[in-house]
Amino acid sequence: MQIEYLKIFTEIASAKSISKVANSSHITQPALSQQIQKLEESLGHKLLERSNRGVELTDAGKIVEKYAKIIVKAFEDILEDLENLSDYSTVKIFASPSMATYALPCTMYLIKEQFPNYTLNLTSEFSAAIEQNVAGDICQVGFIHGKPADPSLMFSKVGTDRLVAVAAQDFAIPGVITLKDLVKHPLIMLTDRFEERKYLNNYLAQKGISPDKCNIVMNLDSIESVKATILKGYGLSFIPYISIKKELYTKELKEINVTDFNLNYDIYIIYKKEMDSSKSSKALVQYIKKVGEKSFC
Image 1 (cartoon, rainbow, N blue to C red):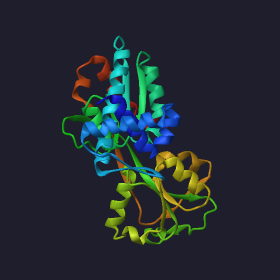
Image 2: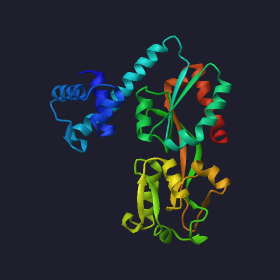
Image 3: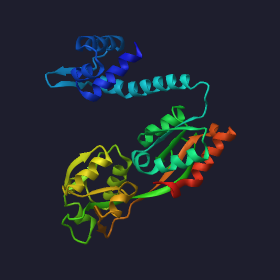
Image 4: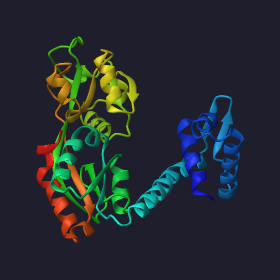
């Protein structure tokens, strides 16, 4: 079994189409189908169900996709590390989507000024995967929501964010409203892959509000998609404050005054204990802790 077969498989699983991947990779469709067939034969399971509408993962395919992504990413990191063998100053940072997109770019600029010999690579990922990547040496530093579940990881609180109920300025809604009444309005939500959505689900459950009582019109897989949709006036949403500070300041969006809603959560930096064994890497971590929330964008 070749790494390339796994890479092609993950691309097909994501696109749900062999023909699309064939076009983008400049490999003939029969050649791709043959690679998938060889992968299925080597694993002893059918991975894809083919139809005129494209392809769907089988149960076995879903399992393989989960681990194939990790394997492919690890192999790419091996190649990258080998290329940088003579330069140990590359620091890979993984962070939750809201942190990677809206908070950390400014922080990384300050880090680069303080540590000019470091090359900083920032990747967006979800908290559980970030823990795995830090523990597995895929990256050196992670930023996650809440404390890590892995007891072997070092961690420190670096900031706090909150979920905010927001809508377009001209969206018709009372100036003050209860949470129970708010969720009757059209809701544009993040998918449950986001920690913020999980926090919200738990909060609503504590308030006795079940999902079927919420007027959820769509679930979107990026904060920017949610923002674009609510800016069009199609509904309101609960999204991280750090992601909409600019729009609130420019008055493109408005924060809704929900009398019984207050959802804050902590942001933690995580890293392995080995980071403290090197003077330079320890200094880097200590500096990140120091600048923390003060330098978030």
